[in-house]
Image 1: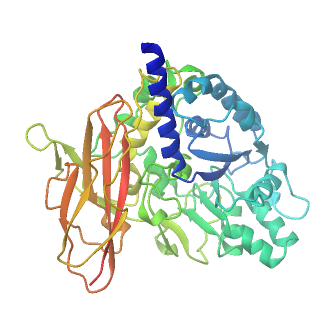
Image 2 (image 1 turned 90 degrees about the vertical axis):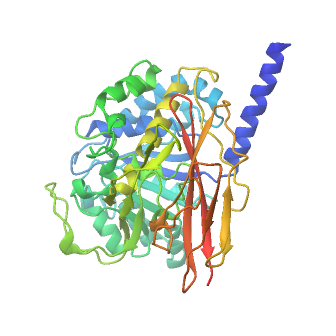
Length: 476
């Protein structure tokens, strides 16, 4: 009877998790990867497959780049999927929705083994470019994200064909569904796309100065914080060794850990990420819409074109971030004495959270449900948008938050000034680590928005965090 009761409880738990997941519309994504040009594509692919129940992977396309101009390697994608297939039965014990390996293998395609614009034009179609069009034409009103880890010419060819074979109305409708995030520019087709399709939603740190790009914060050593969770020792212990075939497929770092992962991190439904609003900030960084000043950009050494942008793009944004650190006595957290300000902060401020999340999912590959950790489920006691008057006090509450493993939970509320229109820091007039907080709205002369983030972290191993974003409209 005890066994039957445990199975009933476990089934109800999975059902409730499934309902929670369904409340969030999954993002669709097609990956373009110059896999084998650098081990980091393989690393990013391993992580991506661990979130294949949270994101609808519509295509995995092997492409070229400035680092691999005459070769594509779809067989390397298939090898990682085969490793995933061996752990997929274990993954679905922890969360529903992980596709089987056969389904993913059918979505592996390839672009032309040609560099950049040499692979764009009449007669330059490939199974990869045709696949993008096919997926885009499906009766699915959700946007289609194109996550570009190398060169963008397979996407460029799809756009070229759409423009030359569709009516203007048809082309506009298809292009309006596209969302593109490219890891800098790794061939000469990226700037061609931006110049020729000025209305296309496009996120990029332009050019090939990788050291200044927001995405590079995923593996940047930051002086003044703990960087252990991007160390080779941490990767060996938490990802590579003792975590089954998928962990064993994760290669050692050669140039930089997972430089491509930020292109899709903000597609994960974690309560913070809002893919349609990159200016709000999320695990993949924060990006604002403007035309960058060409005079401030640096040229790298790859040979990729370096020229001014002709229109606004979604690109590097600045955050000022003062971390909260542990306090041994009294209130369990306090604001640090150091503040960091630059575009990379927008990404690495979440790095410990998404690294722990990665480690937990890798644990799912080999551990039972009872042995592993699972993320908490934040629940607000009010709407995710509220309206207040200047000087008015308001409360934010998350008392009904739960954890599937019964773990003790820590709470942290904070104002995220850069995400809203009101840029001055708003102080919380109560303990920011309580389940509920009290805030007094500032004086404003026009309507302003202020974003408050709730971060809930369990005390499991590894510690996992989920979020809620509350947008406060302040009306004068």
